[in-house]
Image (spheres, helix red, strand yellow):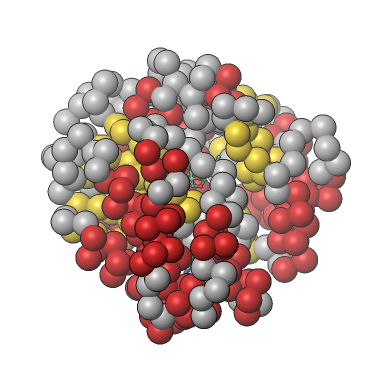
Length: 351
Ligand SMILES: Nc1ncnc2c1ncn2[C@@H]1O[C@H](COP(=O)(O)OP(=O)(O)OP(=O)(O)O)[C@@H](O)[C@H]1O
Ligand SMILES: CC(=O)N[C@H]1[C@@H]2OC[C@@H](O2)[C@@H](O)[C@@H]1O[C@H](C)C(=O)O
């Protein structure tokens, strides 16, 4: 998995039959060097048919390195890099060549997970929810729980583990909540040359500008009913809203925007979850976590609290989904992407 933050490739081994999680194996993080990140960043927003050779070469070699560190792998799930996402318009574009990767690794590769869902009228995202269902069972949840991913973009999955399967009606409700870390990274990158507001040091010193926060929440996206999904840069307006603010106030306000977007999203849950389990890089930001805990009236905890790995959960999700694709099981459903009926995405390339 190479996510929207463009920090690097996360790779993880999962043992599964495509339904239950049978065990977790080793993980590997292969970060992008700054020069590689620049090549990928320059490709954002591009569609198939454009010249993407440089970005493809960075992506393939980083993935090859990440996957080669594991022995005895039977199947690879390869998400690729989302360059553009416009499910109601041009579609969705994940850069990556699964057949070349299968050749290089000598192992079957499942890839292109999102196109089939979009072709059938779905949002094509988020796709981790089917794995969240398996995680809810794995942790022994008996009542609804929510998983919140705070990556470049945020996404929330409400899971009812009492339902028989993830594609069953009422088992899952999932959607992107709004921007999370991507705009904060862009802000501190542009103003201070930093990768991110590490540990929220900047936001902690700032004051939230309530007027900007209110304007942000007026965006049409928040009035749409889920399922709904976002492209990384759909909220470029955020940078305009904080343009006049000091660095610290801008960081605090953007962090509050990410948390407020989650709070808005929570209102769509069919019943309150007993806890919100947080994955993704944003859970390392104590200011963001405090703002979330203050605005939600249930437990907000990193997924480590239940024995899961919040840095690797999305990589594990695509390993799990790969097995589902191979076995002909669905990977999305009306409650997760808005697709008309459960659908199995992904293509399989064999060496
Ligand atoms: N200690 C930290 N303090 C603040 N922010 C952090 C910290 N660690 C990670 N982050 C943020 O988390 C981001 C990485 O998150 P993650 O790896 O979950 O994103 P992603 O998987 O690329 O995105 P997406 O889930 O949208 O595809 C970093 O770019 C940074 O903004
Ligand atoms: C189109 C796309 O790549 N979307 C990502 C992005 O990053 C977070 C959020 O937006 C989520 O919808 C999705 O990723 C996760 C892995 C998912 O599909 O569940």
